[in-house]
Image (cartoon, rainbow, N blue to C red; front, side, top):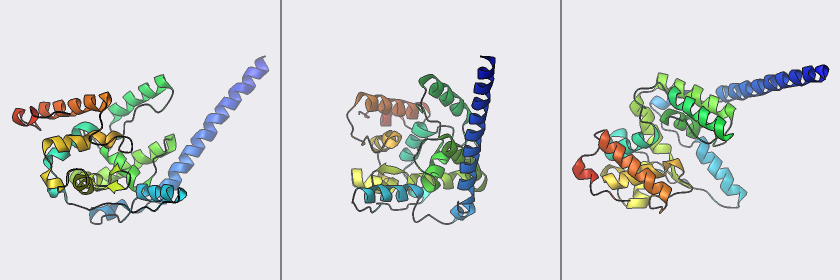
Length: 248
């Protein structure tokens, strides 16, 4: 029995060693095959890893894929949308260095309790890294790569540039990328002219754009709508006059 326990312990240790080696090798591979982040200071990517993934998914179904995207500058984006997205996705964006360690700690607690990837802790910078360079798969290796890239981005790019890229490349519906395309598609107006209600509706669906639309009628979305609007009021992003007419 003692010999069996010893052998089992050794197997567990070796299992962790192999897992760690695999994770490190995967992260190293990701790091070696990525373009220079400094290029993002002045260049807007023509395509992204997420776009290429969607293209492959479409091909596997015998479908064509043509991303709908139109780049706009940071100054052209409605402040209502910027603030709604900050509240919904990463309220501490302008104060952390690409990674929110408090959120990661809370997410790990939740994931451990539920024995699955139940809660995300990705910052706006981490989401941008994933969209530009990685994949949507959920794995420890990908999360580490995401975090490493986020730190690099935060070191090399300004916060406004990171946010500008994020809002221009995020997926708002299958094939629909960026806030300008989303604004025109859903509300038939440029992103600069979004109203508070329209901005909240767009921020609302970032959590799962392939499942929900800005007009989704569900208890979960209604609760999230109120939470985002309330937070915007509390943070001073909306006046009472702007807040009171809002209704999901």
